[in-house]
Length: 162
Length: 184
Image (cartoon, rainbow over all chains, first blue to last red; front, side):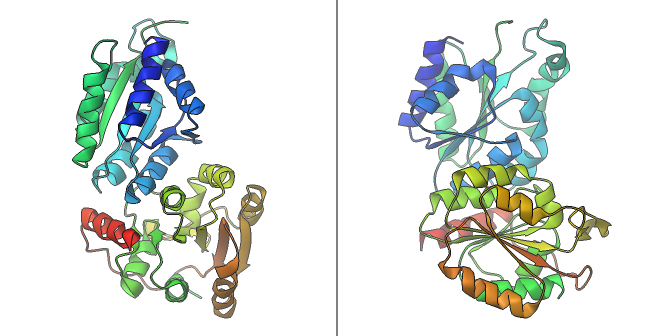
C-alpha cells in the first residue's frame, strides 16, 4: 500500500477515537507506524501477546486501541485472542500485515501466509482487507464493531517483494 | 506461609484498590478470600497479567493498580518487564507470589531458585522488595504506600497448601464490574 494511504489511515483512525497504537513492527505497514511515531502515539512491545494484554488493560480503562503485527505474530497470539480478547468480549482492532500473500514471498512466510484467511475464519474473527480505494469504508466498519464491543481485524496485504 | 495466606494478607492491606490476578491458583485464592468488583480475574492467557496491569495503570493514572502474579506466569512474559521499565508507571505495584513451581499444573519446578528475578527487575527500573514472613509482608505494604512505582514485591511462599474453588463469575461480568469500579 502507498505511503500516503498508510499515513492517511493512521490519521483517520486517530481522529475517529483510537487512542493507542500498540504492537510489533512489520515492514508492510512501515509508513503507518512512522506516522504514529510522528504523533507520539506508538508503543512497541517485545511480543504481540504483550501488546494485546496492554490493549486489554487500556480497554478496561475505556481507552480504545489498535494492535498491529505481522501475520506471523498473529499466529503467535491465537490463544491470547481466544482466551482473553474473545472470552471477555474486549473491543480492539487488529491491524495485520499479510506476508506470504504473494506466492513468491520469502520462504518463511509461505505456509503461514497461505493459511492466514483460514486462521481468521477458524477464530471467527471478523476481518476486512484494506486497499487503496476501500480503506475508509473498512476503517468505519471496524470502528463500528468496536463500539459494539467486538474485536475485529484489518488486513494489509504485502503486495511487493524486496 | 502458603499462597492463600499471603494473598489474604495483601488483599486485606490494599482494600478496594484494583487487582489484576494471574490465572491458576492465584485468581482462585483471591476469589475465595476476597471477591470484589475491583478484582480482574484473568482466567486464561497465561503470563499476561502484568501486561493487562500495565495497560490499566497507564490509563487510570489516579488509581494504584496491583498485579497478583505467579513465578510461572511472569517467566512466560519477561518481556513485559521491558515495557513496564520503559513506560515507568508510578501507580503500578507488581506482586509476585513465588513458590518456585507451576503449582496448578502439578507442581513442576520453575527456574526462580536458579536465577535472581529481583536483579532483572531492578535493571529495568522497578523498585524491588522481597519478603519471606507474614510480618515482613504486612510491613512492606505499609511502606510502599508512599513510594512511587513501578514497584515489585516478591513474596516467597511455600509450595502446596489449599486448593480454592474455581471462579464462578462469567468473564464478561468480571470485565463489566471491574470497569465500573475504575470509574468510582
